[in-house]
Image 1 (tube, helix red, strand yellow):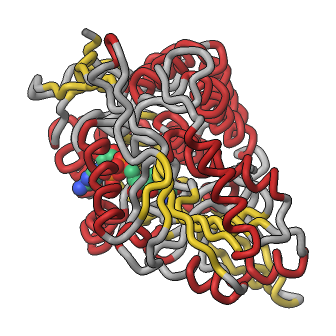
Image 2 (tube, protein in one colour; image 1 turned 180 degrees about the vertical axis):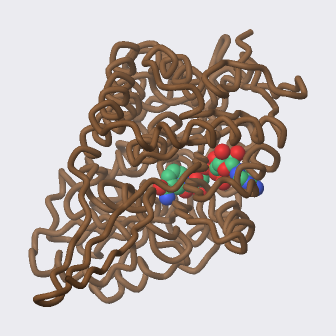
Length: 480
Ligand code: NAD
């Protein structure tokens, strides 16, 4: 049984009160490691270490800071297979996905910001013949970074890398549902020579360890990715303390397919955008709107392909659909399938657990599920399910598609399939979401602003947006 440790002040340590939480392997439904049940005392120690490390880290030369973060990126690359296996085992995601997406992206997050920090610049404005304004951007202090379970190391490092690159020190908490790769990262930080206290990783529950980070008066900014309800709670705690806040929250993303689309591309990519990572990517399109002219053809082909999808052992080569992350989440997803039927929906394929054999018989496997016949206002089409469940609905006009797409309280991402370039721009402009993909999905460029509108969040991550979030601008005006 692996006993995970906190990483505080450069050392791997047990939680102050000695308590541990069970960590389950979703494919087997069994406990396989123990997570520190950290609390206020552990967070206090971590913040003290981060505060102490801040003056020297923020003054470290850009070259040196960049070199250390690049070393960390290289170590992730050298340990790619080990990290991918750990991620797959901890989360239930297919090993191939962890190997080709999650871990390479964690590596790239560090190398991207390690090199980015050397190019980050601030503005100056010549106001008149005798006046110039210039802006400096300095690191702020201790950043709190809190991340979810769906893309564990990928999203954890997406926050930590820019925070460190900008010269801040960090107290971070990965999800208690998937803590393993954050623990392995702390070992790599020691190997990379990251100075003590620059990054501190405290494991534990959201209500205790997470809340203690948000409440701590010396944590000056919070970067959070997770559910909208948690985000609301964090905002309520942090706002009166005037902390900087970046909130990346839930989604209920539309996938709009016009009848002039490239049918094969739309079909192939929609299978991925619906079910990649068992539908547990905040960017997955869970509401598929199809124009009437191709509705039946698309539905029938889509359902046939989904029914043929194999759900399998996440660690086996070739598996494309693994287990969902936990028992409560498994039950939540199946609860939504039941709700969809009560709301008048018809399950076209899936809709139930997949019973596996041998040591996977207790695992949390769900057949990919397609539902039609629901009203766009029903709970199934309004609330985030975050699993392998999509709904199909026909539409006639562009206006109708936009009304459906924009008709939820969320606004993270949207996908549009059309070959009409004018329509593509028109629809992209009218979609109320932070990210729009036209004729593609999940094509990422780390320089672009990442985040949502409405209840999907506040602020943007990525590129200079992240570097700006993690620095404080000061404007100096000189008359000469
Ligand atoms: P969650 O909100 O339950 O937990 C996220 C993190 O917050 C965890 O580390 C948790 O321990 C911590 N936390 C919980 N309560 C806290 C509190 N009171 N104070 C401080 N920290 C607390 O979310 P989850 O179930 O882990 O993740 C799934 C959600 O994340 C989905 O809603 C999904 O859409 C969202 N998500 C959003 C994005 C995005 O970029 N917008 C990306 C991935 C996931």
